[in-house]
Image (cartoon, rainbow, N blue to C red; front, side):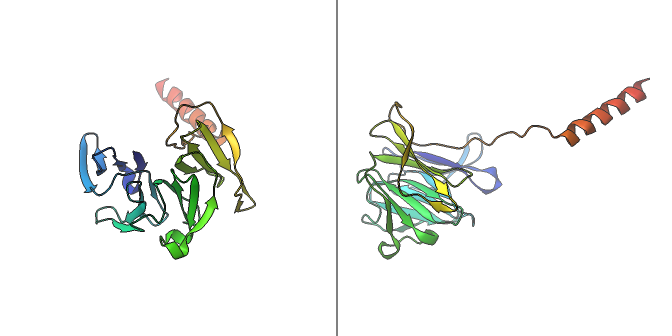
Length: 203
């Protein structure tokens, strides 16, 4: 139910609905099973290369370095119906509780009841979470077909959502497209010089 790229450009995919495997793809159709516990939700990496995996079936979050076993934290419902996970620029972990309509924050990515704070409530079945490059948090609300946005203003994330989009059909997870930069003036000038040299050589 989730996918993310990790270090080395490898693709990691979690499957749910009875399969429960976490796969690592090193090439098309070339995969290994890293974990097969729980109905898996969204995946996210922090800045240290630690993988986090939401487990909606038991309300826990698994984490670990890919290639070694993942460890469950909060087994028994520390994050309710944990469906989505996202990491901010400071490596704080955010987890969506789909059935409870809430988002929990775990500062520093430390998953425990003592380290849990309620970031937001009143959401309609929040599934996927996503931070953009500006530090804004986006939430896919499966229950009402909307995308909610929590704005980052001056380095502080608002706990009050604004509506980013409505009218969607059961949105689940999101991703950010990496923009392809336009060539700079220096690049274009360099290409022009190369072209002139090529023409001179052909004469």
